Amino acid sequence: MKTRAAVATAPQTDLEIRDVELDAPRADELQVRIVASGVCHTDAIVRDQWYPVPLPSVLGHEGAGIVEAVGSDVQGFKAGDKVVLGPAYCGRCEQCLAGHPMFCVNFYDRNFGGGRADGSKSFSDGSGEISSHFFGQSSFAEHTNVVASGAVKVPDDAPLDLLGPLGCGIMTGSGAVLNVLQPQPGSSVAVFGTGAVGMAGMLAAKAAGATTIIMVDIVPERLEFAKELGATHTVNSKETDPVEAIKEITGGGVEYALDTTGVPPVFAQMTKSLATRGHGALVGAAKLGTEAPFDIGTLLLSGIKISMVVEGDAVPQEFIPRLIALHAAGTFPFDRLTKSYAFEDINQAFADSANGTTLKPIIVF
Image (cartoon, rainbow, N blue to C red; front, top):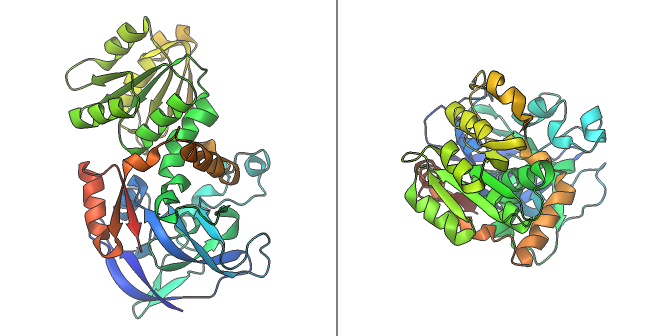
């Protein structure tokens, strides 16, 4: 079928909206009409080739839409179902079978390989093939073929124009807190970075019952907004040493901490801000090969634990419905992080995300 897609062609270059040809879904796929798709930092860094996904490519990995066709081997879905799309995973490796599909041993190939496992691609135009199946979905297209195992069926009344970011950015921040850090009620949590992932982590910490929630950033407006959403303390790390500030606020260190920036000096600050036997997590993406300072001499005696977390270590079919339920109950207002853009304005959405004007852009088709 013919459809339209936003195609990444080169680093630091605007996406091109093109008429493209979409092939038929394979036996293990769904063909989905995309209603909306979030714009994530990962889309930008892949466009810019931090990760070597073959270009030209249709990116997008926070899609939500309506099933239009179902592959012959797919069970549990029918045309007309509303779905939120998560990452692809094999479902057969030891990590998938252990309930950690976001650490699938085939995760990189299935999500960043530029096509199906057999090398075929869903999209083409007069110039040739275009990379597809980004995070199993390539949701910057009006129609796309997705890996069925990554799709999550949602209720018929679900607001698809809002829910796409639950498939990555919002799931990443909230999942790192709820699934990995698991703060206890009454505990202390520090979050480094007040982008959409950091704010989602903060909202999750509040929902979990943490009573000291410290947000760290260098943008005063973002810090003020974090207070509106429930942060108990904010630290401007351009003006104040965040490690000293956190230790003063908590009386010696924070029990749980989350680094959403992927910036090496910030990661170091996060490790040093932890209390004895504290637990810190990193979700911020950095260029491959990036190294961060880690004071193993001083920190050995602290007993801290550091986790590297992908996609919130979530099982999307279980976790996304939980987030939807929390949002419906009013305890996880992630909608306050979002702003909608028309498909034709997708490059403005990328720009607004990069300069911080918008925390979580959502492209509405």
